[in-house]
Image (cartoon, rainbow, N blue to C red; front, side, top):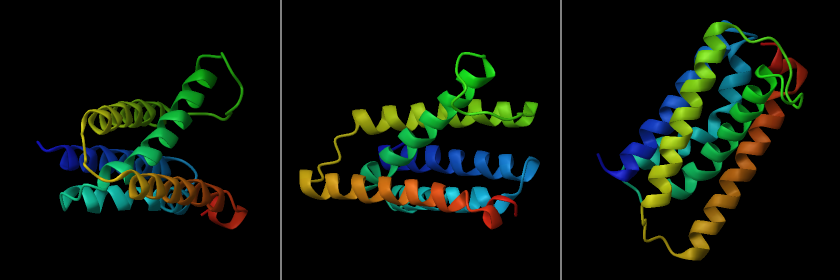
Length: 145
């Protein structure tokens, strides 16, 4: 499998797992908003575009960080994130974590031959989009739907 497709599959796995979490927890609209940036590396990766790496990396880093914070809470080691997590949600955190690590490993080993300026700009813009999407998903109306 090519690196762009692997990154697309990893991003799609994260997206689907987050949709599952939305379906079993507090509503899917919140998770649909949170995952909007993941569509960029999914589409670019399946189209074999070299920029897919730089679209995926900030999303995968973000979601891996969130999963680590959840795991630290579940283990009782940190209280940065709180809440109650069902067995399905816990299973999805593992799925998301594995997909993020696999996607990041594929991205690190793939020499995409994208020049530095477009790569950095893409990374920064997608990271900003991911942070904005997450923040918008916390608006009370969206968070409860």
